[in-house]
Amino acid sequence: MLNAPAARHGSSKRSRFEDDYDEDMDDFIEYDDDEGGEDGPRYGYASDGSSDMEAGLEELDVEERRAELLARKEDIEEERLEKSLKAAKEDRKRQALEALRAGKRR
Image 1 (cartoon, rainbow, N blue to C red):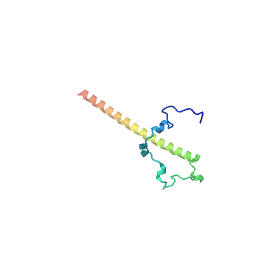
Image 2: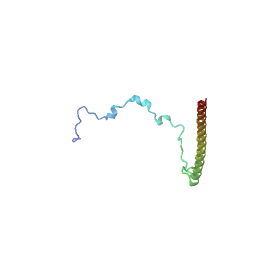
Image 3: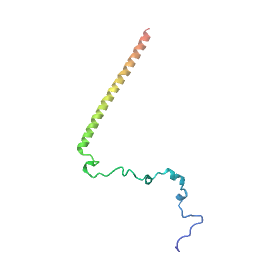
Image 4: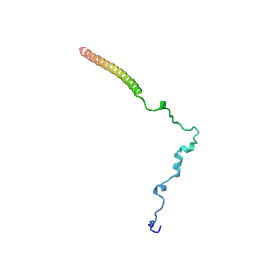
């Protein structure tokens, strides 16, 4: 300690973060330790092969086929809706033109 530099006047060994410490903020922090752990672990480790999170090729193929069929069905329904909305719009347009022409004839 003989060669240690002298501390500057007004400096402190505490860091600036310790100066900003606010005890009131401790009330807002929840610690898992306080809960006591009555329930035990929520997720256990299963070592058997059937619990593996990895999917096989067959499972992937089935899921992809299911997703493809659902997407095609949704596309068909959306196309039907668009066609019916377009037809209704054309009918309104046609009726408006007929009403306009009938008004000019009078």
